[in-house]
Length: 273
Image (cartoon, rainbow, N blue to C red; front, side, top):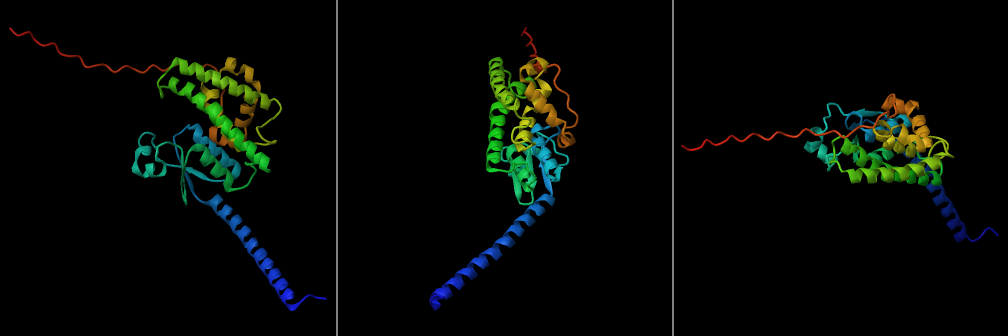
């Protein structure tokens, strides 16, 4: 009626095992919460230069997530990032780099993702689909907007060699990408869901240099939804705390001519008499 003694013993053992597992799961969840709290309060140091739009990604994400990030003191681009201690954190010498208690992280999107995951305040959405969509737009804005925009702007700033054909190709690539983005934003205030996520933070930071330096009113005209979106985001308190007040480009920057180095004059040899 109540089963054999062997069956009863096995049943009791199974229940005890299940109860033990349940008891172990709760402390593990508590440990995860504690780890998140510790990460949120630990010291993070960001190495970069003033005005680096790639550093803005992590800094803005930190504002939304309530995470404190210190900027490295006395950091000098071209000097500090060539020192051995910096190259241990970033083998390529590129910025930004985030130093944590557990190690360093380089690549701006990776740093922003790390900061966004320290606490859960919605920067990664609320569903699996949200997460996938956020990652989708991060990749899109990195590959289709940031890459060609740098090919247009950096040569004008004298950072890269100028090539007219490459500039034209970059402009055409940007127009296609901005058309896609504009169509999406016709029906959406933000890229995913109804609030700012990490996708918006990275997208706006990737648009930053264009909106500041080369996207004048004539260029922006076909992409009014992108302009509305950008202005809406940069005027949020979390963005303004990092970027400050922003003014849209009025006149595109022009190619900066590099001064030619004067060749030392050769002294004329005196004719032998």
